[in-house]
Image (cartoon, rainbow, N blue to C red; front, side):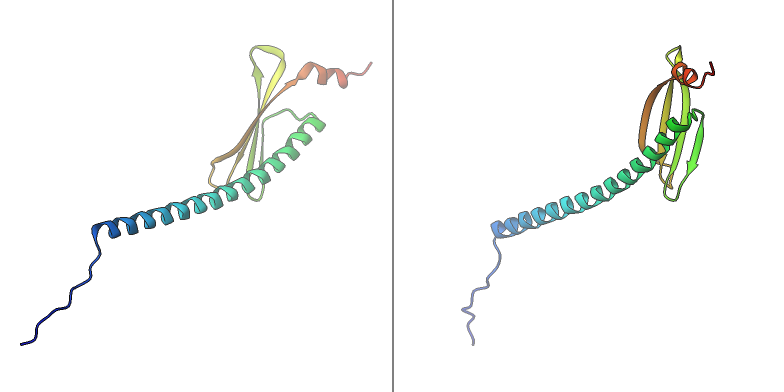
Length: 125
């Protein structure tokens, strides 16, 4: 008869726990990297939206076109709304919203304008 004098080597509970902790740490780091990449992509979209919004806001002030409008661009839709501001006759609030293709708000901006000063600039003596 043959005797089996060989011992089987197995992992202890502590070794298994240490391996699990290492795996969790690696997945945590991978998740952080993924979220940073995704966040930087969203930042690029917000910067592009901000630049388009700046152009439209500058054009609005330059041409004194203070009325509700909607601009459809390649990647964005910009909605401009004008409303009265706190029962003040001379003040209006410009609301700009930049929407993506799915209709989600990417960026918002609110500005106050004084209508009376605009009318005085165009008054003929």
